[in-house]
Length: 279
Ligand SMILES: *Cc1c(COP(=O)(O)O)cnc(C)c1O
Image 1 (spheres, rainbow, N blue to C red):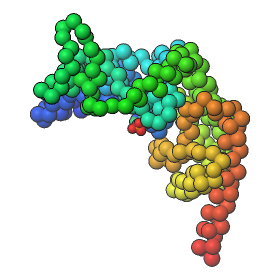
Image 2 (cartoon, rainbow, N blue to C red):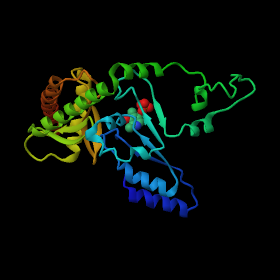
Image 3 (spheres, rainbow, N blue to C red):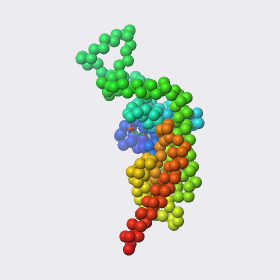
Image 4 (cartoon, helix red, strand yellow):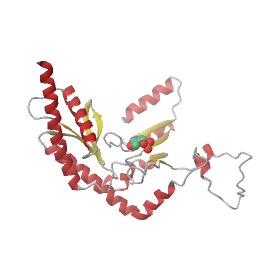
C-alpha cells in the first residue's frame, strides 16, 4: 500500500462527505507474501483517527523472528490483527483468530445482557464470558488446539520451524533462478513465485501465461506435488507457499526437476497442437 495514495483517498472521501473509519494493511500478501510499510500506514491512521487492522492471516507469525523485526516495524500500531493458526502456526483446519489491542472495544461492541441470560457474576467474581468478545454465542473449544500447539512447540519451536520454511522458500527461489528454463519472480516470507519459460525464441506474454496455467493444472492433477498460482504484473506464475514443517530440502530440489520436466512436456504438447492447427 502506498501510504501517500492512502492519504489522498482519505482526503478525497472527507471532501466528498464520506466518513472513512478503517484501514486494512497487509502483513503477508496472499500471492507473494509482501508486507506493507506498516509504520507509514500506522502514522496515517493516527493522523486521521482511523482503526488500523492488519491482515496477518498467513504472514504475521514471521514477526516473531529477529531478522524480520525491520519488515514488520509498526506492527505495534495496529488496533487489530487477523491471524489464522491453521496456516503458519501449523494447526489443523480451521481456527481463525482476531487479536485486538484493547479488548474493551470487543466487549463494547458484542456484549449484551438480555433477561434470559443469567450468569450471576457480581462485582467480586469477574468471569470471562467469551460471548461478550465476538459474534459467536455457543462456541466449540477451537482454542484448545492453538493452546496445545503453543505449549508443545513453544516460541522457540515456532521460530525454528518458521525460519526453516523461509530458508526452503529462498532455496526454491534460488534454484529456479539458476535453472535455464525457469524464471524466478518473487520471494517473501515463505512464498516463492516462478514460471516455466522454454529455451529459444522470446515467447509472447500470452503464450507463457497459457503454458504456465496448463502446467499448473497438470502438476496438480499429477499428484507428485501441489503448487498454487499467482498473477504478478499480468504474468501467470507458479506459487509455492511453504507452511508445513515436514517439507524438506529434498522436496524443494525435486520440485525444480518436476516442474522443468513437466514444463517441457506441456510446452511440446502445446507446440504440436499449434502446428496441427496451422496445417
Ligand atoms: C488465507 C488468507 C485469508 C483468508 O483466510 P481464511 O481462513 O481462508 O478465511 C485472508 N487473508 C490472507 C492474507 C490470507 O492468507
